[in-house]
Amino acid sequence: MGRLTDKVAIITGAASGMGLAGAQLFAREGAKVVMTDVSADALETESAALKETGAAVLALPLNVADEAAWAEVVAKTVAEFGKVDILVNNAGVHKPLGVLETTEKDWDFVMDINAKGVWLGMKAVIPQMQAAGGGSIVNVSSIAAFMGGMQADGGGMAYSASKGAVRSVTKHVAQMFAADNIRANTIHPGPIYTGMAKATGITKEQMGEVYGAGTPIPPHVGDPEDIGYGMLYLASDESKFVTGEELVIDGGSITH
Image 1: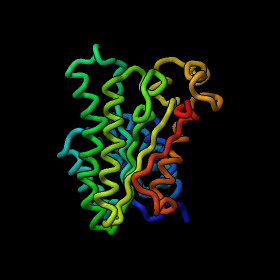
Image 2: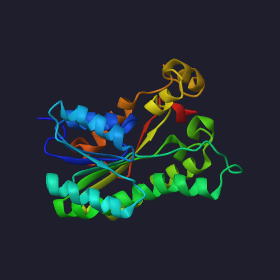
Image 3: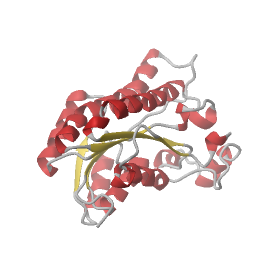
């Protein structure tokens, strides 16, 4: 048996990067995976590839800042698989703008996806978890919730604020829904070589050189799978006595 056998998981931002790595690992460990993303074409491509492995996969386009869209995703998940055991709020955006450069429109965009989207996902899924007798929520924050500077937030003030909000609201949920056997934890990635980074033309080695001074473990930048394995642990029953906690996966960045 796999680590997530018979579990049903919704993962946002699952068409690439850390979300895709999580979806692939979850499927490998026996979960029924609902992959969601705003990029419909990439979502279709990646979900089709995962289905070819024999995994039970449902692909649903989703703007995480849209409450009605969340209700539709949850309804379709329950109709297809009967329940929701796991929610991974991974979708996120970044704008490398500081306090003086950020406009109100920039702030609202980042906060809508990174913070509001996490809240709406939990709001939509928690009633289903209550009905199922429990569940696990994994919210992807960032080391920017602990520290400032380019090493943590890439110069993104709104990004930093949004990830701090994710850290705080997760602790609130952990306290308020523990009696329902619903756990909520955060993952705090450091520098990770995702498809988004690759699209800029930078190599993993070059990115490692950029972060080398602040991230002690070679090659100074992680892979999406490093975060995916953290998602897997927090989603599984192996972490059944863990809630309100912060799993930092950063190569040692915050030890500075």
